[in-house]
Image (tube, rainbow, N blue to C red; front, side, top):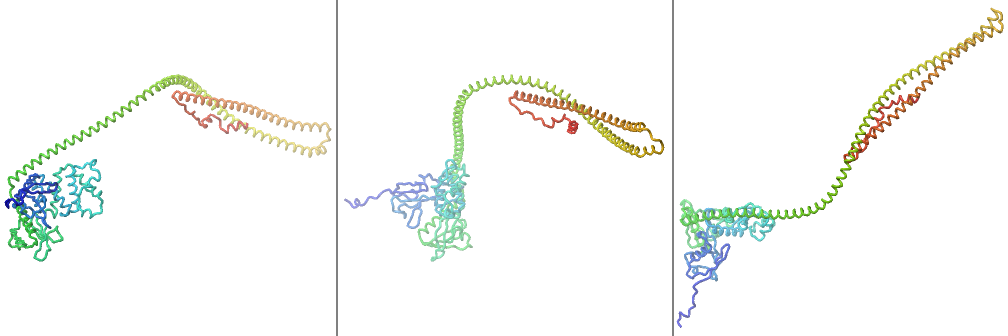
Length: 591
C-alpha cells in the first residue's frame, strides 16, 4: 500500500447554516467556493436582487466580520463549527429608503433588522416614536384592525417596545396595548409592504439609524472617542453620546482615507482643512472599518449617478408589481366588501327568516286565540244586539217621555208664569193693604187721640160744672130769687145730667164704629193672609213638581245615552224669588 493511500480522504463539501431575519437555511457548499458563491446562493434562495446592501456576517472571538466575496470561504477566519453559521444582514443602509429600496423582500428584510435594532436598543428611539412604530409593526403583522377579532390582550405575546421605554413609565402592559391599538386603528387600509415602508421612513430619521460604531483614540494611549460610519460619511462622537457627533466628515468632503496598521488618516477634499488621524487597537476592527468606508463611499457615489440598466429594470418591474398588487388589493378589497355585504345580507336574511318564523308562530297562536275569541265575540255580539234593541226601545220610550215632559214643562212654565204674575199682583195688593193699614192705623191713632182729648174735656167740663153749681146756685137762690120749688131743682139737675149723657152716648157710638171697622179690617187681613198661604203652598208644589219633571227628563236622556247623571241642584235662592218679603209677612202675621 502506498503512502498516498494511507492519507485521510478530504471532504469535498461542508455544511453552512444561514440565518436571515425571518428564516434559517442550511446549504451544502463545495470546498472551493468563494464568499461570492455562497452569497449568491443565499440571495437566489431568498429571491433578493438588491444584493449590494447585504452581506454574510460571522463572529470572530469578541467581534464580528463580513465574509469577503473574493476569497474562499474556508480560507477566511470563519468558525470551525459544522455547520458554519452566518447571518444574512444589511451591511449598508440607504439614505432614502423610499427611493432606493425597490423590491418588497428588500424592504421586508430591512424592516425586520431595523425593528430588532430598535427593540435591542442599538438604535435610540423616543417613547412617542416607539409607540407609533409599534402601531405600524402591528399593522404589518395583523392587517386592518377589527374590534371583533382583535380583543384586548391580543398583543400580549408580541415584543413591540424597547425595555427602556417600558421601564421609563409606570404603565401596565394593558395600558401600553391600549395606546398602541389607538394608533393601530387609524392605519386601516394600509397593506403590509406600505406599513413596513412607513416604519422605515420614520426610523431613518433617528440619529443612530444605519450607524456602525467603533472605539478609537486620537492618540495611541487614550481611548476616548467613537467613530461612526454610515451612508452620509464619518462621524466622531464622545464615548457617552452616540446621538450628536462632535465632528463629521461627509463623503463628499473626503478626498482620501488610508490606514497603516492601527493608524487611520482622513484627508479632506479642502486642502486648507487639517488632516484628521485616529487609532484603533485591533487589526480586524481596522479592516472592518476600511470595508465599511469603501462600501458606503461606493454606494454614495453610485446614488449620484444614473441608475444602471439592471436597476432601471428592477424599478420598472417593481413599479409594475406595485401597480398590480395595488389593483389586486383593490379587487380584493371590493371582493371583501362584497363578501362582507353578502354575509351581512345573509345574516340579515337569516335574522329576517327567524323573525318571520317567530311571527308566523305567533300569528298561528294568535289565530287560534282569535278563533276561540270569535265564538265568545259572536255570543257577546248577539247579547249586545239584544241589549241594543232593548236600549233602543228604552230610548224610544225615553224620547216619548222626554217629549211629554217637555210639553208638561212648557205647561208648567206657563202655569209658573201665571202664578208668578198672581204672586206679583198679590204682592202689590199686600203693599196696598199695608199702606191702607198704616193709613187706618194713623187714623185710629188720631181718633184715639181725639177721643182722649174729648174725654179729658168732658171730665174737665163736668168738674167745672160741678164747681159752678156748688158755688153759684145757693147764692142765687138766697139773694136774687125766692127759693125754688123742689121740682124746679130736680129739673135743672136732670137737664145737666141729660147734657152729660148726650156726650157720653156720642163717645160710645164713635168707639163702636172704630171697633167695628177694626174687626172688619182684621177679618179682611186674615182672609188675605189665608189666600197668600194657599198661593205660597201652590207655588211650592208647582216648583217641586217641575224639579221632579226635569230630573225625570235628565234621567231618561242619560239612560238613552247609556249612563245616569246626578240630579240637577237648584239653588235655594231661586226658590224664594217669588215669595213676599219678610217685612210684609211679618206685618200680616202681626195683624
